[in-house]
Amino acid sequence: MTTRFVGLMTAALACTFLVAACDSTKPPSADCIEAARLYAEALDQNNHAPADEKADKLTARKEAIVALEERKVKACGE
Image (cartoon, rainbow, N blue to C red):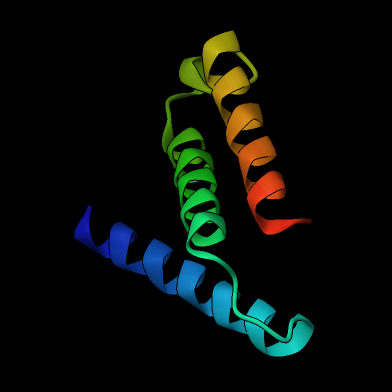
């Protein structure tokens, strides 16, 4: 679990720095970073879930992922 967490956090930070360096005059807000982190974690959990527990089979998981994506879009202005 630690290796997966470290990899996920490294990827999230790399994406944050890339977006900040390439596209914006100001760094992303704390809300944007948190929303993106939560969305990435939800996608990672869905990818590692058993086949019968993935978002395409469970409505609650699918709705949670959609809600987190909407939160990310709203916070980051994408």
